[in-house]
Length: 345
Ligand code: DAH
Image (cartoon, rainbow, N blue to C red; front, top):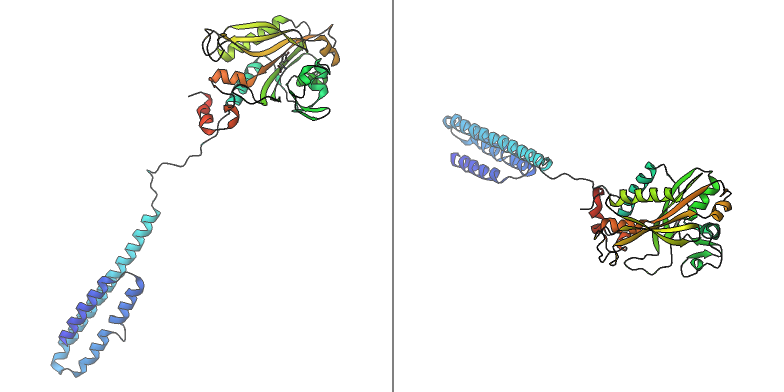
């Protein structure tokens, strides 16, 4: 009987060492410690022993039972601890992991330039106005002194939507809308998209951007025009930039000028960007034609004004040294990310 007990003890201890989960542990308990378990079985056989051996055997059985119970308790504790540790390990937060950040977007270079332009003109007392991109013939051409047979109306330049309806070819249309609704003194700029049926290449796009300007008041002269536009060019390109006014022609201004700045790429020596000229043209301007003023109900004897139209795309490409206008419209993140934070990297 003693050998049986010892054999049982070593079998049970071997078994429990291999136990991995609660279910097998419970089965182990039933097998060795249960009411119908192996130990009980042995106890039952005690009756057959001689009386003097019984207390000794009884003690041994109790010892084995105690050993089983302890082994069971230890195993059970170990398993609970292991489960807890596994859970804690799974729940651990690694504070050394890099954080998740939401990357903010940034202004498109066109909008950065526009924001700077708005700042400059607002500081000179200009309001910002908006105008429709779909215009009538009247606002885009007629009221701007562009008669019906003017070549600018050609189908090859203008996108017509209907007989009298078109995609504006110039923000100048905003001048008329402003003069019809506001009384002088007027000082506005109107930024926006304009459309022309141009072939796409490095310097042309059928959609581009202009910023129109208009000043109307008593006693406005060419000196005001020069002062405002020179100041603007210096703020955008820097104080050392030279500004040049060239005589030109626009139907809605008289006299008309085009304004050039010394090439920001080469400083005026001549390079690929300025096509060897040393100058780049940034805007058209002039004194508002008396016919345009009177057409809007403003007496040209009493009031005068100047207007200008700045090419925003040109200004942006020269300022940031962007070699191809198409880059402004492709929305390639590798390009746009270079302008994060408002500065060119
Ligand atoms: N609208 C002209 C263009 O698209 C630019 C322009 C020239 C606007 C002279 C004006 C101006 O307001 O006075 O080329």
